[in-house]
Amino acid sequence: MKKAGVSPFSSRSRTALAAQAEPLGQGERFVSVTDVLAEVSQMGDNFVFEDNEEDQPVWDFEARLGSEPPTEAAVEPEVKRVLDPEQADILSAYSSEQGFRELTVDDLKARLEEGAGVLVLDVRSDDEYASGHVPGALNMPLDRLSAAVKGGELEQHKEQSISVICASGSRSAQATVRLTKVFGFKDVANVRGGTRAWVGAGHAVEAVQL
Image (cartoon, rainbow, N blue to C red; front, top):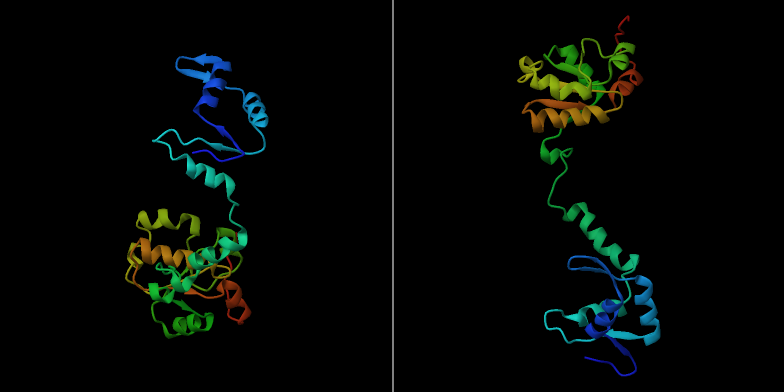
């Protein structure tokens, strides 16, 4: 397959270049890119691959070379469809559909006052916990949570109602998902807004003297 007005870059051209190549090793040859470009420039600005090798559909490469790359605007709708949560099959672990539950600091305060047997699990660092925490809260930093659970430190609380709290509600959300989805705890809720919201609502805190 040849086109009028263009020069073929065929297996014969490759053979000519190979003859000029420097030996590299057994079965291998080193071809200078400079030599390749020089020969192509002598052929002219346009060239095509010659379709004389049945096992290589070279017209595919020729079409690809002559086409424009897709623009960002053309790709964007496809990306948006992929990322559209309404079309996604996977639900977030932090969604109510997946059993993720939250309560406000006022809800937590009421439950503690009712004596409902709630365990408040504070997953902030030791220093944060010491600076002020919900009265009676158990401190277990997020980065030690998995090891602590595997070590049986929370085994006695596995069937208990647990309210997980941190500074703002982010780390505690991670801990809530980890406890329910990974370790099989049944009654775990994240405290929305964390200790900051607790303090902001005027509720009392305990501090640890270091």
